Image (cartoon, rainbow, N blue to C red; front, top):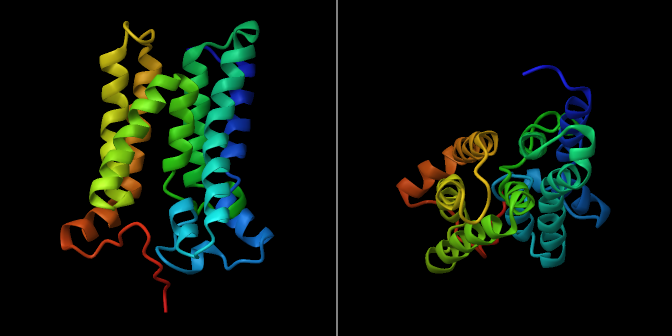
Length: 212
């Protein structure tokens, strides 16, 4: 693939946008404790919820999702005029997701990326985002484990895309590879959760448990 400056710039900017850790930003702006200092220590909406401030958790969730959705949406909107297609949009979404996991502004110590990944999926196709989101909701509702729901959704996201390819949306190889990469990174970031799930010590949704 030849070098394409607009695509390179878009991907770099997407990474920088993803590097904005809104769990930390929202918490600090509201005078709350740093989410990296309690609960799971993960700077994400689920851990902010453990603080008891539902508004802060909701704001974190929405902003983290938006930073995954926005690059994909913008490139899909104006990218064709600059020589950027759906593949570039997906790669920009991946860059934003990686930015959330390894944010340059926060010492490369970020969250697990569930909300940001959801935003990327919605940006690629709202039906894909809805189907994957529903799989998360169903597992979370019945089992009360956010991590388990995220792992199941990570498995289903590329599966849904592959199954619906050519039917609900055009099948793009770069998009599929990107979704697989996001899913594998999500699973990797949840490796400690997987160990706790296996041991029966994973915290359930609604738990308000802080580190001593």
